[in-house]
Length: 215
Image (tube, rainbow, N blue to C red; front, side, top):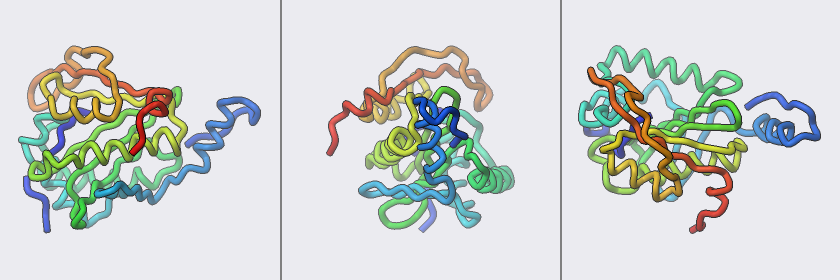
């Protein structure tokens, strides 16, 4: 997901053979929290979406200055209402295909979202976006870091990637601070807002994550 720390915000899988490494990871996934999820950072909290989040989410996905950095077009109210209902229903499915979570700011309002999509071979993909008036405070770094820690520590992932626009310097900085490494450029990776766009692929391995300095 292309993303940039972002209009005005309103006031696991079945085990295989028990003795194998795959079986151990599967048992970890089976015991990981699935729904509802609440993850706390020093200043922000990540939680599952609720029906009352429509206006706040629209301040993110309905703002062209935000979606120019994302992998989908700007959404109107009706489309976002339908998407939000789908997101809430998907979160309650078992097993979860992703962890698409609201970012709640220090004063309580929803200020953005972060997502950890789950793939094969113990992989994940992280993305994030904030309301435009919340850019520049470090909230994207904190929220993405909380989700990355959750992916490695609780879900047993081996590799987490992120794809962001080549000119999205703010998102590149977020990922670099979290220990991600740029691995290459994917040409015409997404079609959004009427044009094909490249993406830079970043990745973080579990071994890299374990070697990062802890606060």
